[in-house]
Image (cartoon, rainbow, N blue to C red; front, side, top):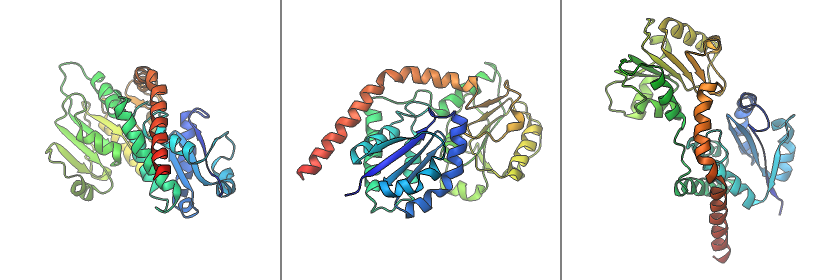
Length: 316
């Protein structure tokens, strides 16, 4: 029987920004690769390809044209790898929970009868369970870091005005539903289809509004805050966003986009925060220092669980 293998390159082989650009450039290949029997996983910090060796060999140069990649072989190694990813063991923010949802999303491109599909589902379940059991949970996840930065942007007795979340993906939806730092009397989720999103989310908080970028009022609101949680923007959308934010003059702009959208604001580090700046990374470092001592134990627990599961399957 032909080997199934995995090949991957992640943020340790390039700068995080370079890896994000590379990942975004090939993400669209996921559905076609799925039809070829390949599982393509692209996140902001990694590119991974799984499948039969002969098929992976055929497409590998397209996915890894220049950078070095790591190869793993066999069902056990692949399941271990995907379980560790699902647990946040290899994330830039250790213990973050979004990666397992990204793996699930990428897996939708692969037919359910593909053996890697079953391995990945098992890995997701094991990784999530091990993360909770080992308390390998980010105390400073993306939403918590946003909260910290917003809190630091206002004086203790200062009342903020409006919070705008641009992007209706998983992270944007979670941010709008949470209390981020000081209480904002108004919170707006900026999305391309506000009516459909409002029906889908069914959030009862009357302080939450939904709007398209072109429908937002052009007014100066220095007490406001803007969080960008999307990267999939056209040049036209980017221009509209920049004009609106320039007029708004918010207290702080936080970019959670792996490929920053608002490049024209990059010179203002007091007001403009990205995932690559020292202000954001200081919280990442604090979180990772807390969880680093648990990494080996989490790795071993995942290996033990998978070994036990394999034993039961052989005995069945």
